[in-house]
Image (cartoon, rainbow over all chains, first blue to last red; front, side):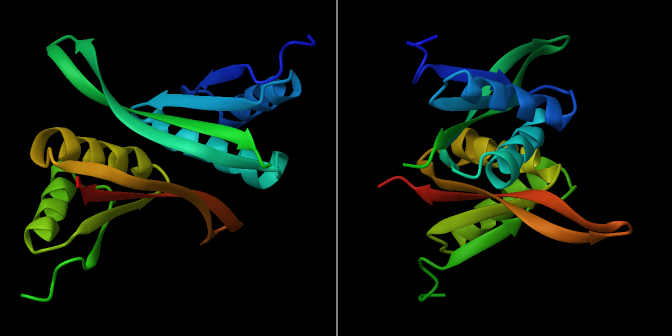
Length: 95
Length: 95
């Protein structure tokens, strides 16, 4: 595991309880990740913000929000193409 | 209305249809606002991202996301204090 520093890890936020994703992110930091990116789309976007805030305020108080990017993806639905919003929140460690 | 340039306007995102907030933001830009800030908390956060994306991709194609800030507010509930996540998305015009 010596070369695992600074690997960029991703946690995809879905419909599970918030704490599942908080734990997933903490696990990746403990495994040596320098930054962890939380990705979500649609209604899971609010949960991604919850995960970031809980990490930052409660479990990883030396962490910081490096960047927040929003975007749009096209998904195929039963009645053609629909647009869905996306968010990527990157959490790093304070220098 | 000559002095209304660069006033910072805020649209609070709640539970109404997304297009209501899109129209509110467009109205503020047309009234001379240099930037418009979308504020939301809790589950309305995903709707705020939708509003920003629709503005940027469909109605104000010369606009850009200036900043995205996330935070936590404490609200009084029936069983004590609860934390709720917040987002502030500032939309400006491309230079």
